[in-house]
Each structure stands twice: as C-alpha cells, then as structure tokens.
Length: 107
Image (cartoon, rainbow, N blue to C red):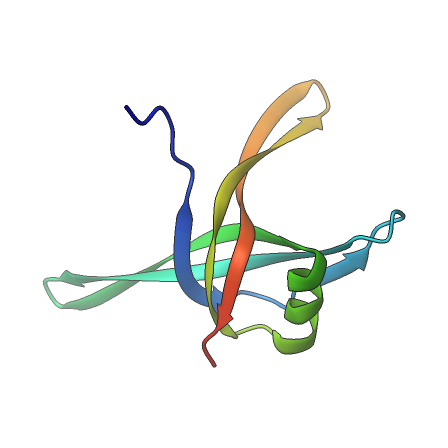
C-alpha cells in the first residue's frame, strides 16, 4: 500500500525574473513564480485563469535558471511540494511551494 506520494509536474511561464542569491554557506538559491494558464470555454468566448505557483531551485539548477530564464520564459518543472511557515505579528500562516528537482527550458 502506498502511504504517501509527493510529486509535481508543471508547465508554465515565469511571472517575473528569478530572484537568485548565494547563501552564506555558499549554496545557490533561485526563487520564482510560475504562471500556469487554464483556458475554459464560456458562453461568449474563452476565459483564461492564471494560477501562480511559487517554485524554488537549489544548487546547480539555481545557477542554470539564473543564466537562462527571464520573465516570460516557458519551463517544465518537476519536483515535490514543500511548506513554508510564516509568522506575521501573532498570526501563523503556511504557503506551499514546489521544490524543483528537474527543469526543462522550453523556449
């Protein structure tokens, strides 16, 4: 019996330029937002809804993204879901993100 499975595959366009940084331990990190469009037929035409997904690349993948990607770049990412926990004032919130394990540049 499969107890859990954490795998995500998404194709979309970068909503803005990746935010690249090198951490104090020397590890590279790139944070991005991927826009995934969903087109639906409505009575008088098509409706496009965008879903924005936060994604993070580490190490060599982050360095590749920094060199090859700009806002609008089309990519396929495969990875796993991760959870960020944020504390704002006295309120605690959670945000899902995709931790990228492979990326394909589709442009």
